[in-house]
Length: 194
Image (cartoon, rainbow, N blue to C red; front, side, top):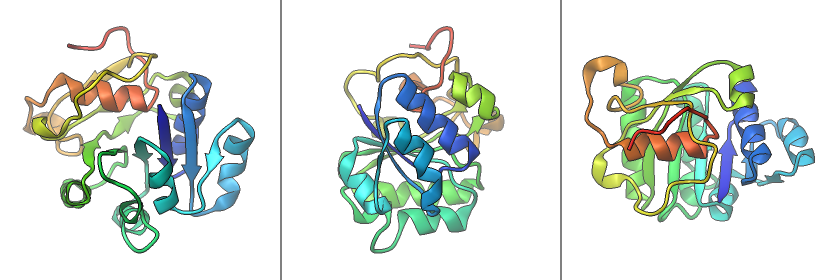
């Protein structure tokens, strides 16, 4: 699977490196181009803009610092949504306020993409080892049909409603949410529900 990663801070870089290690074709983008070099040396392609990233991949993982960074990466003439978003899976792993994720989900859907929010818990070490905890959420009708992503299976992948809203307030989203987001991010787990 062709997976893009936008946002190459410590966690984003670790997730991208893990995806490369387990055999995915990874394309990366970051506002600071220097952060792409180690991943390019490890085999990743480097996109010149978020829009170019969206044009080159099947799924996009973002892990950004705040609402402003999300707006800068997703919106505008060179943002992810200016590229080919139709039919693409967008997995946002940023830890931001619920209203930011709700607004982003609507924009992704309006562009023809599928949105899964999946904030993660853990540090760089577990990210590199595929041992992050991810809690994915999104409306059941928006999860893509088709085969699950290739191994490794997630170590822990919860499904407690919207990821940013999870904390027990909402539940009942499908197990597919956790599987798609966790596997795309290279998370690992003893068993995947469903």
